[in-house]
Amino acid sequence: MSDDSPPASTWRPLCHAIDVEVGVPVRVDREGLPALAVFHLEDGSFHVTSDVCTHGEASLSDGFVVGDEIECPWHSGRFCIRDGKATAAPAFEPIKVYPTRVVDGRVCIEVEPQASA
Ligand code: FES
Image 1 (cartoon, helix red, strand yellow):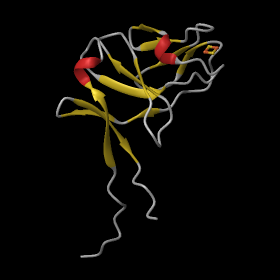
Image 2 (cartoon, helix red, strand yellow):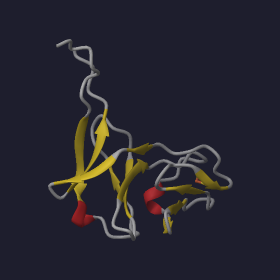
Image 3 (cartoon, rainbow, N blue to C red):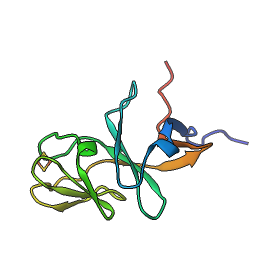
């Protein structure tokens, strides 16, 4: 068999799911990753986005969850937590969203494998 398949991605744990209350985002800082915001929505799903607003660099985890959107605490721009799209001005650029799943009670994101040193 040939081995030309792409390298497997890795799932990196960020925090315990039980520590993320519905509607209360949690900021996570991990070495080698940008600041992240972890969300637990009313439907039970978990999502991870960049924590930094694309308008003025506010910390979105200090903002307000409204349905499946996060409202920035500085100028009330909004983003869809599920896909990162900006949904209310003055935010226009999307935020990054990460493939997310819960493994053994921990919220994990899929990250690219490290380039071999
Ligand atoms: S810093 Fe977020 S809307 Fe301005």
